[in-house]
Length: 163
Image (cartoon, rainbow, N blue to C red; front, side, top):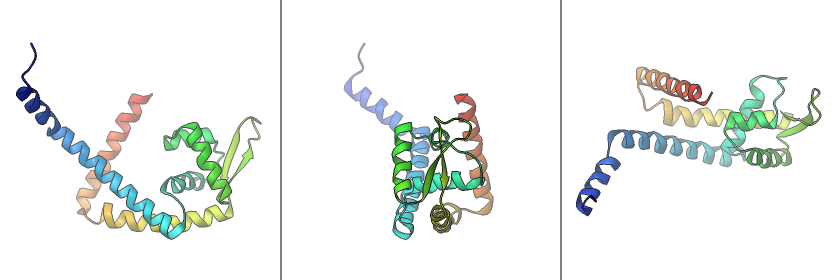
């Protein structure tokens, strides 16, 4: 039997207002707004996007580490073509360069330039300011510790499912 429109509307409203839907929506909305604040500040102060900063973080994390575009795509959850376009823009801006892999001529490695390292240091300071202001400061120290611990547990569960 078909539910009457009134019952259907009520069931839909209950589902849309459920605790899990609301809580997850709050997480996504907060993360999106924080990312937008970071991206705006980085573009205004450093002339780079938040995604470009994420690439530079990955490239600067372990100096001398060989990182391919494929690894960057996986790390940043971007498509191969999206990563290629991003690295093209960053290369044009003088932030990174592609170099051939010594072990496989078919693979291009990506490394930061001196200009890229300088941009990274400026951007990292801006990123830290925004994160401190909107992610750390609004919470009591214990709440912040619990939040980051919970996010780590969620990430671990999601990574375990992906393998």
